[in-house]
Image (tube, rainbow, N blue to C red):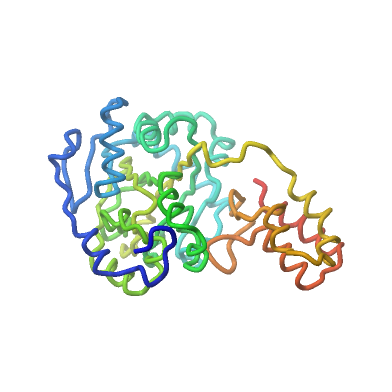
Length: 367
């Protein structure tokens, strides 16, 4: 495997198998209470100490890549939050899902601020959670940023295709190949994925499918797009039943996907937590909309590299955005400002059309 760039040819299923078929040894994790299907189980009342944080780091980085905390959230607190989330869905606050067909589930994007504004007392009780603080500080250090998307998988809702998560997991294979190997190694430590069970989730309801240890495969952000790796996942994934209030947290590079809800009546609700490193922001704020508006007439007749100018001026990343309004249409991520600018220049849009579409794109991104 190359040291600096990955290619699709670097993805060898036999290498992946060797990584994923490792076993999780409970003796290596003294604060865990059990190992179930290679997944570490912890009590929901661990102290926030450097020793325990170190163990959790090893579990997510060098071990199975996933930990489950039993009873991490009080059920009465979860029930009150469920009432808020249900009201948000009933009021039309749920939107589409880039991993599921319409009607299969109800997804509340941007649920963190919607929850806080609708019921700040319930929000405070819910996020006053020591387990969330423990695992977030362990993986990301201080200054982390919590976001939340509520996902309700309705009876009959089909399973997701196995994938990795944000950042590189939200890219096509072609896009991921544009990033050098060291960025593939960096992406998993920029976020932490979590899911809080808001109802009891026996296996028939389709709790998340996981492939323990798969986060350790270096070329995984390329490999998960390939059918042979999907087939291997489908033959070897594990699913853990969760009780209301249990919480699973995992390395975003772990191969995973929501399971099929085969129940006849259970609407499987989970609060999907994505916690981001505080380092994921630039030092200065820049008004890129004003920049590209001023540059557009110049780029229409520019003789040099238009691409270089766009890369240095326009917003080239799709996130953060408001996924209620700025939903992905042709992939896992919405169109970027740079994409819009490239299209406008290539198609020679009049300035007033470009400015109108730019303003509309900006408006869609705001909460």
